[in-house]
Amino acid sequence: MAPWLPLPFVFFITFSATITTPASSLPAFFPRAAYQSLIKKVETPKPKIPFKTHYFPQTLDHFTFRPTSSKIFYQKYLINSRYWYKGAPIFVYTGNEGDIEWFAANTGFMLDIAPKFKALLVFIEHRFYGESLPFGKDSYQSAKTLGYLNSQQALADFAVLIRSLKQNLSSEASPVVVFGGSYGGMLAAWFRLKYPHIAIGALASSAPILQFDKITPWSSFYDAVSQDFKDVSWNCYEVIKGSWAELEAMSTEKEALAELSKAFRTCKSLHSTASARDWLWTAFVYTAMVNYPTEANFLKPLPAYPVQQMCKIIDKFPSEATKLSRTFAAASLYYNYSRAENCFEIEHEVDPHGLHGWDWQTCTEMVMPMTCSKESMFPPSGFDYEEFAEQCQMKYGVLPRPHWITTEFGGERMKKVLKRFGSNIIFSNGMQDPWSRGGVLKNISASIIALVTEKGAHHVDFRAATKGDPDWLIEQRRQEVEIIQNWLNEYYADLRHA
Image (cartoon, rainbow, N blue to C red; front, side, top):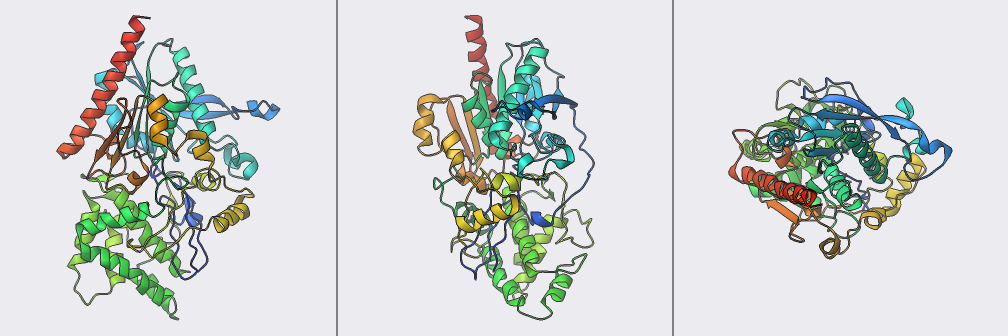
């Protein structure tokens, strides 16, 4: 079967690409990249959030001095100054791959703690996402424009904007703490390492900074997704695992597409059984990522502990029901928990959050190989770098640099390296989040702390507090606040004695 190259997890989700080597196996794909080649960008209502919108005249290229380098584009950022006064802390969210309003609406933790710290809240949009398009509608035209989309330029954007903001506020002494989730969490951690003179600390939630090269086993992500379902119900895991063979068997039948279109209640007739496969795959992967303990609407509206609810649906079916019918019913929870959909746009999904730039990033620097082991509930698959590189070359005319991130930011022997020169970083992870396997899960030093929860999902600690939050989540946030308070106490003590 021809390999399928995905585009962008959000971070929030978030993010790279995988390719299969055996022609007979189904391809694994990178989460947050669901059938991206078929996705349409649509205008959606902006969430109502208590922020004022600003635009900063940002430099196109921070690292060269060519005539075109100084071209200006307008970078969007959001501010909430309700509790802030001059000299008080500035909390900055390092935006990831999507509209910045989306991340602000789903990072209520920062709003919750702003009164305690009297903090100014700033959410900075990542270049080439949302409205921060350096070349306007032509930003995605070719590698000539997309060449300015990378993590190093994004970090420099944040640094320049933060420095300018502090100058304009006449508050140069205000300490800055950066926050980020998923890819944004990676950026927050890297920002602290690259710009320690600008940020005194970083809270990096669900940040898979060790997902590169061979630092983390390539099968870990999908093994973790599978474990989430297995922990709820062995039968649920076995049904999903067996459904792919049923789907593949259907692909040889003459009326397969008509049958699938009817069974999957598609709005339009399917053109490929692969579309149905990807639709199911996406639902299970994303549901594992956002297996939150309370109702939420991050990627989709979902109930509390949606993995458990999916497995309940599968387990209630009579034994004579096909595995495929059961997995369809479970996946429908992800796509239609609100029961607002009469049919499913399986081959024409929309991109409401503007994630489409991630495909370029996975084809250049964010190369995170993923495979499916025999223990996974997904069909076994491998990663073939040559095929992956060939597809990137065909699409963009560029080749990936699979070792660039670990060269630029480190990765190998990260614990020993950070122990000697790093400080003031919190790495928070929940073990039900499949991205946690590529995160920092143990303390590195007295000031580089790993906060790990057994039942946590993808940057769940960043969500707004609710009455239904479990004790372990309340305690995790309490620890984060306490650590940040200690950073600030040390900073202000140093300032007084300077």
